[in-house]
Length: 273
Image 1: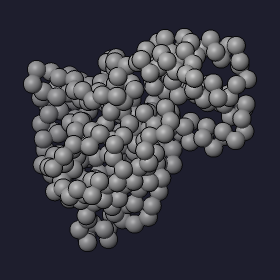
Image 2: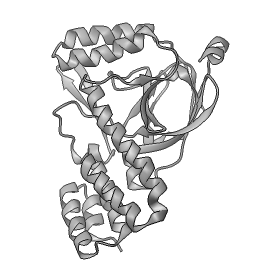
Image 3: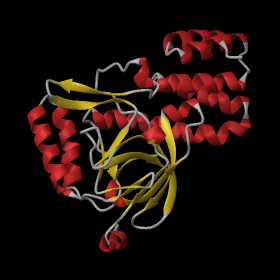
Image 4: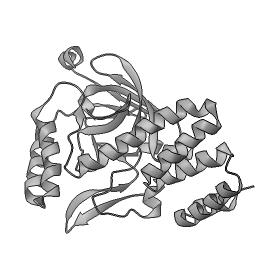
């Protein structure tokens, strides 16, 4: 039987769910399960520092939760860094050899922050033209190129690996695999396993939702990764809201529906990464 907090959450009422769950925690402060639920709900709401407090409490109440707590402490730290990147105040680490076009994408964020939309658009157009088109297959369906639908990202994929927030050009990937969403936190971070074009494999977390534009307040459907919409400035797409969407020349793929992505790398790229 669902609890009142769960019912509120299913209805998209994040404020009501938080009120109900907070009351539940006050009644049973030693219930680690409730603390995990509260941590996840606070992450959905973007209340990162409060979520960290609950995560520490979870690990104290249940020592078996320490591994989970460590991984998501790092993920939350990366979310705070990520906000700074999209506000134009930080520079992301880019996987592989530096290329001018990745620097243009970063500079475009700084121009956005300065209110220079035309300059930002010009830099992105230059970057998209210069970035390599990487063919491959999504869910077994072939494509000639792939990109993030958010124009702030395009040829790169955000990923958290070993506690570091990274931008991975699709040309740096050989394969990506994701399990079906199983928990509330998967609406915030999608666990993935990655094979790099340069060799080697790792596990990581791809932010399920787009980083909101500075000052924006996402709707509950966007916080729950239940929808993807676009912030517009006239006919200009500013950024995405809600669940991440990958696009190819053949189809669109919502991140939570994607299970397998393979990319074909030229022999030289695979050798030199």
